[in-house]
Length: 210
Image 1 (cartoon, one colour):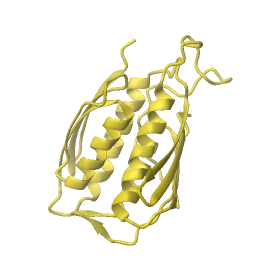
Image 2: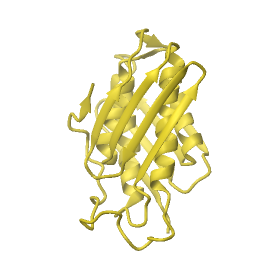
Image 3: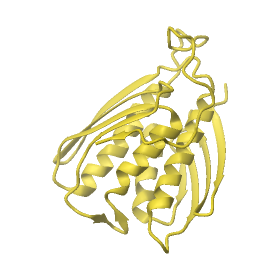
C-alpha cells in the first residue's frame, strides 16, 4: 500500500506545493518564506515520521496570514488524499508533550468531521516574523482540510516558543499514532458506519473553537 500524495494549490494570494508520504521516516524539505513556520513544519515531519516537502510562495509583502493558512490547507488536503478511504488505520491518536516548563495535550480523530478545539494562548504578539494569532489559523486550516477532529490544549506554560512548538510536536505524535495501520484490521474502515469520508480535503469552513 502506497500512502503518498502530491498537492498543488494555486490562488491569487499563494502558490503551495506539497508532497508527503505517511509511511516515511520524517525527512523534510520546507520553504514557506516564514522562518518560524518552517521550523514548526519541520518538527511536524520529524516527530510524525511523515516525509514532507512543502514550498510556498505567498504575498508576504502584505502579511503572513495567507501563506500560513494556505500551507495548512494544502498539507491537510495531502494527508486526506494519502489516507484514501482510511481502511486499516488506527484512527485515533493522542499525545502529552512536555517542553521545559510547558505541557500540551493533543488528541485527534480521523473522523471525516473537521473540528478544532483550541485552548492555547500566547503572551507575545509575534514570534520571529510570525503573528502568534496565526498558529490557530494554521491548525484550523489543517483540521478542516484533513477532515479530522482536533483538540489542542496547553495545560500550562510560560515561554511562547515552547508553547507553540509543543502544539506542533503534539500534533505530530498524535497523527503518527492515528495514521498507523492496524495489522488486525487492514481490510476494514474503523467505523461502524463503514466509512470515514473519502478523499476529502476541502477548504476549512469555520470549525475553530476558542
